[in-house]
Image (cartoon, rainbow, N blue to C red; front, top):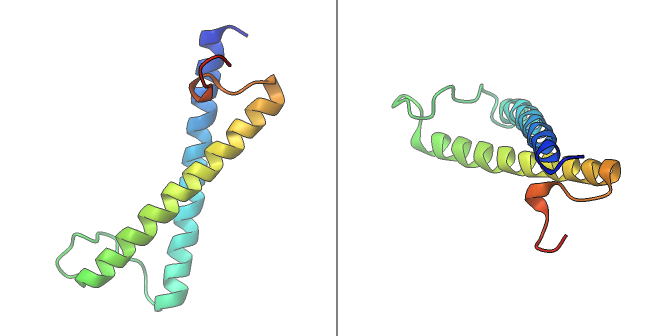
Length: 97
């Protein structure tokens, strides 16, 4: 596979994995927020009608969970890429690989 072609394939594969991971995380966070607090998650934490501590908790929870889900999905995608091609995706290669 050409160097540029592999990079394009990896870019698309990584993007799809990250978006899928983020979407799945967001659904899980919304549901767990509703179960743990008994109310819907804030639609807009910047809204002055939302309590500041609720907004902070929501922002921290969603930020961390979405970032972790994206990282996990991209790592899984990288493992699949390695199994499929026998080498790391171009952006993840270290010098000399």
